[in-house]
Image (cartoon, rainbow, N blue to C red; front, side):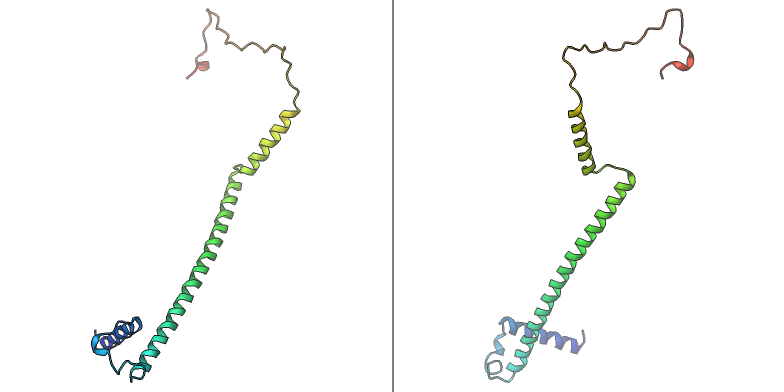
Length: 142
């Protein structure tokens, strides 16, 4: 670090100590009192630091606001993209399934009730192959 940079860094450190109220013991007395010769310089540094802090705070608030708007915009875009892809693939949405379920319930209510005494048809059974015949090679199960 060259001499100018080191001197600048030392001045910044001293200004920070003054702003925070932590002065080295050798800097007490007339130089830093309200009427001292260095007071106007340190007062200007303090005011500049406060202004800079307010600007940084404003910048951070603006960045947070922009970030929230960007997040909302991105969510809107992604939801639209997903909805278009679902539509393109032909998948049913929750709303479509709900409408279909309600329609089926309405249609089932319209059906006449089956009479209790009506017999159910017997279950279907497999027919056995007559003993003298065989199945052809292509009709068997695999």
